[in-house]
Length: 293
Ligand SMILES: CC(C)(COP(=O)(O)OP(=O)(O)OC[C@H]1O[C@@H](n2cnc3c(N)ncnc32)[C@H](O)[C@@H]1OP(=O)(O)O)[C@@H](O)C(=O)NCCC(=O)NCCS
Image (cartoon, rainbow, N blue to C red; front, side, top):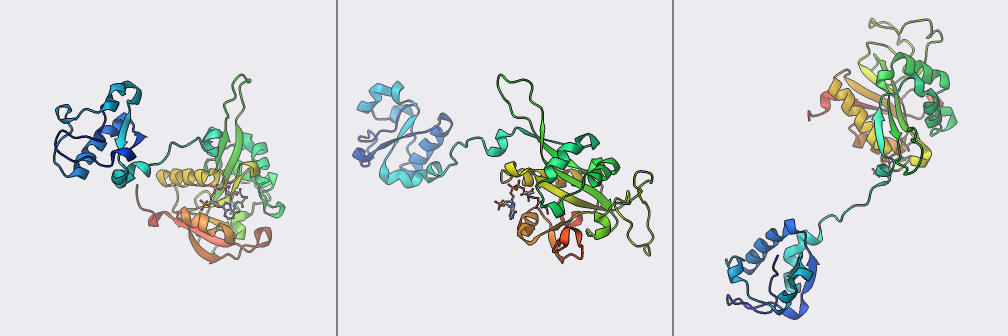
């Protein structure tokens, strides 16, 4: 790449303030674009073909300056797009975890118990409820595992860093019955078809059109890295793509309402659910309201 002259011009165009030029590193892929813009900025309609390029003393050291274009200060406004471009980003805290998403199963029970520690004690899912949910409907769960790359270390084991645990319900919102678990769940199959007069059965209902998320949790040491957002987005997309439910519902305390709204949930107002001491808002994401990709 040759360089834009700064002080003389054989095509008769007066030079700009040559004393105030700066060297700005420009990737080769951007250089032709700059040349075009220089022509436009000068309004001279003259191309930058080599035959029209005036010689400049600095060009004797072309190799050393390769990849640089001289930009006059007064022309800097024309390069705003360049100065505003995103700087190369460092790997994020999320990248450093080398995360991957995977369905959970009963074999993950100990990991899930550990992740539940993210909740205040009264809001945690008990080990038995986790067993119940991971036995009856593991396909409605999702985990993010971290598999950090550690050079010269024995093969690392994946660690569960975030999870979503859910069941199905025929109720359009999460209720105390949805949150509950039948005492005899080990010996009884899940409840199925309901008539409109039935009171809501406890726990998972195979044919419910609502997916009730009981737990979204991120290990405390990994919160604030985008894991909660990532696992929720992946979950919503999976359920939507599979077209296996009409909606996703969950309960949230006030501070997290904006987080769930940013994911497409609507706040239906205070919930009657008394789980964990109550004070919940009922949030629902209706797939009929979600635009197709
Ligand atoms: C809530 C939780 C799942 C969020 O996961 P996370 O990985 O920390 O969240 P992210 O890093 O993806 O951040 C998502 C957004 O939520 C916000 N957020 C996260 N936790 C918050 C909290 N406790 N209160 C208010 N906002 C919160 C973040 O500020 C961020 O907002 P931004 O995008 O505007 O910056 C996690 O903090 C957690 O496990 N908390 C304990 C369990 C819990 O309360 N679960 C929710 C039950 S409804």
